[in-house]
Length: 148
Image (tube, rainbow, N blue to C red; front, side):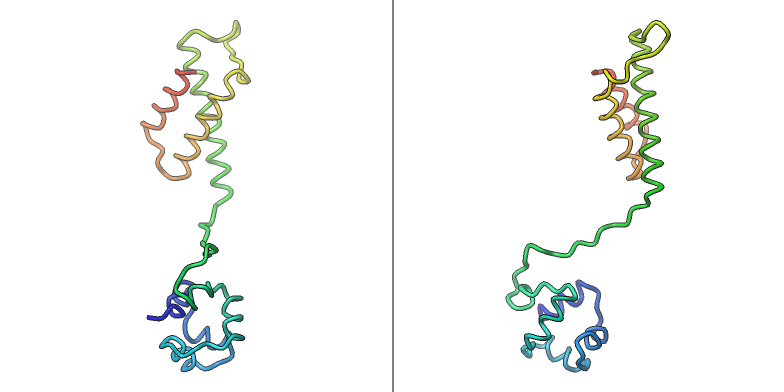
């Protein structure tokens, strides 16, 4: 398989799609994949389609590989963040309550505990977004709050 074929496959393009985009027939694409030199104007068009031309020509990858980003469900991410903040604050509160470190009216200074709340929120958000939220995560949050 040629480097041209590798790139075409990496990008998910068919021979037919490439032929259409480059204004050639499919047999021309097939010949290029078998080693026939590719004209420079066609290489330029391939570059516009996302081809790594350094790889096509030399077999060495450039440092500018196209990475497909996973899609993010914004509503789910916001819900996870809100959940994590609530749980982090409640966890720190419960630890302070057990340690009898609450104020005279049962409150605590969230600003003084902000670093711990932030770390707990990060743990919980990551676990919620990756689907790995379980009792060990909650235990880790309590341990974090207890260390503070």
